[in-house]
Length: 473
Image (cartoon, helix red, strand yellow):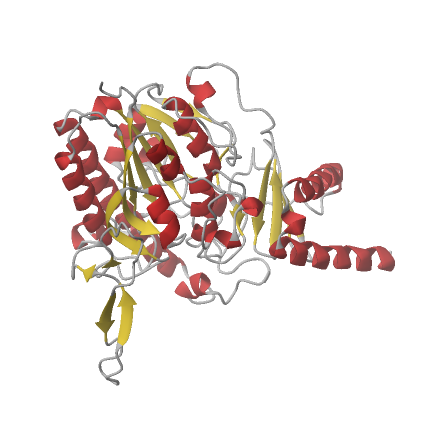
């Protein structure tokens, strides 16, 4: 008997923020295939990550996606995933789906093999040279122990290092490598009795930002629209000034340099969009498209000059909001929705759409009721964010309060979405600050933040600072 449940293709970008689709209002960028996907599906314009507990924000973000768990309930910042946290691919595999994984995996080799019954061109790590990806074939026994020798400083040394990998396809861009593998797998798939879960996890548009030249030629840096919150430096130093991401541009940031970074960022996204178009075309050629749920999203946002920042180690909108599109059977076409969403909601949503039981370890909320216009997500009128032991924030429909060790910011995000005007010293908003501060503290307890090492560090320093201010008064 043929299993009638829909297939799933999950497309996961790396560092692509929420405002990088033409269909959602960015007139500078070219994303025709993702725009078309949206016309056949539903976009959530208020999709977020809750931040990250380490500088490599993508690592906990990906752990949250694959486990459906919240930031302070994942293990070891996402470096590995314990067996009691049932993975998304693992759930579909146990439910009779053929699961195939391609591309970046940042949460340990053991959890990859729990998730996928097969795979190819697997990259275990955070970032690499896009043109020379150290990749693995799928090893059913989980022994990803291959190493390839390389001399990195060949002009000054003969020292040999060993990169974990089975193979490197020199000169093949990561976006092309992963997309070609996905297209080939779709064409080879034999639709018999089992549906499939195909996971394609890209390394783009993460730096080092490089792409085939034809995509760069689409963007003239001088003609791009810079957001009004681009700044030479952040308003104050909160502890990330010298981390790797922030060293990608010199201080003070110049308009010319930021324009160059933005052009490269957009070019990488257009390259990604182009190859996603090939995957969608392969689904149509094989007559699988109409029976396949497609999800497109990203693991975190990126500043690229906004607020004087380059990376994603903050609680600003540009860093915690991501694109999220669902398309396929059971998904309304052409809808834009503004419910508050976390990436951890995707896992239970896909389970419900495919009639797969949701494991008890999953903490996210299914979005499936929204697609049938029945009900809504309960208890999601506030969002809680964190970055390491440096920043905490809470967001309502109208306001966002961001708290550092020694400073706070209050933005009326409903009217100031670029978070330009800090209202924290305006007496007219003192009551709102107090309300949101109370909610922030309540969330810190309810979320498990206070028990997490990063949370313990943040709140102990914050409490000491507050006590010192009280004593001065």
